[in-house]
Image (tube, rainbow, N blue to C red; front, side, top):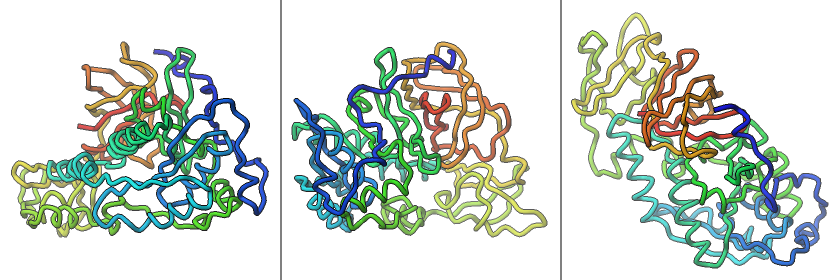
Length: 382
């Protein structure tokens, strides 16, 4: 498949995110006056209490959307952002809703997260949350309220291809691009999603929120998984399960017993710190075997591999890859994509061969495939 098959034109009537040159002023009402439209498009804005979703609301209103705001409660105790989100909606004059998705989030995101760690994999729960919660449960609620579109503060872009398919593209700012965690969205989900911030930098986003009189314009962002704010994933799993992880053994590649490990949920492929194994050279986690609770360790050079298999795949510009595709692939959220050849090996599987060996290819993470700025799709690394 050739590169030009993945290119596109902008979708008609969709916001492009290029609102940095809109008029500003201290009065939010002047900045938020929507453009005249014979039939305003109706949208529900996923508000988190942060600056991104609030600025997305500002831009959507400028682009003529009839908007309401809503926040999702996703786990017990997840109430801190409600006040900020409600206040932002109030400043913007938006109707505001609060949805309790704790049960759905527990089953579709947290349960998968725990099961993956117990199986020796390292998951990315943001992928599941976007697919199943934000553009699943939340989008369903939007329809119930008679609102056709879902607007979020993601830094990514959606365009319409010449063949009518919706395409997912990187955000214009490489430092903020979130296309990696959105690769699982289907055509139906993309057709109803709007990302007004796709063409902006974070600085421009904060400026839009500040001009609109939003107090959260300078709010700091969390860098951790939302339901594990302290970053202690193993501790979270133990508390959730009500039991301590079973200890096992560290094993060298030659089968040598190198001591006691704390349980497989404490480790991920490529990990060096916290192993506590004495020796003349640093050792790294090469593999995890939950069936006998062992962690295989070895030297850094053994972490590199050229191939991976992926399952649970989603392709965006096409239904299937009928022939090998030269593309670039990202195997971690903040990694730079690497050149590779991608082959579809089954209805739900891919084989990816990199031009150069990659460090610590990790089961459970997403392998996301790009053609320039366009997301071809991806899957979960086996």
